Length: 178
Image: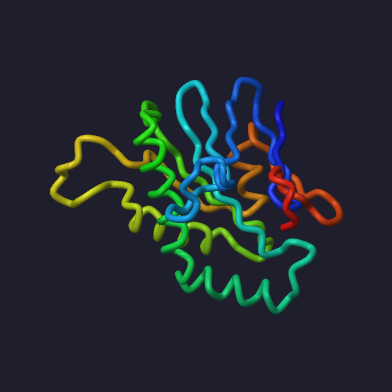
């Protein structure tokens, strides 16, 4: 298993997974394109993973509550949409969109319940859009699936990619404090 950290969250990836920390400056277009945190290549698919951690130990309660309000009110949907779309476009232009892609958003906030996660997932499916135009003109999908998780649901549904919170102040793989 290979592990990566984002803030003080650590995610383990199975042997054979090719993991790229994507939202650093290495892709060269951070000035004009948004990026998901990780792109993971598996044998049969790609995972685009975005991690949000409003519950980071350094976050103040007011910041956390304000972030949760915005998230639940759909105010952050556009940012999540563009993170996916720009990452997809970048990988497409590199000729790397040769397998199905699944977009997973991990929101490390214990107070999110199942109904809220389903509502946020449904909203994300609509704005990407998962199914394309109603007329069915698209012959290819831009995303095969997407879902929004908290840590508990992530670990329940994605057992092969466990997430744990590390104690203390976290550093991401790029060396920055989150």
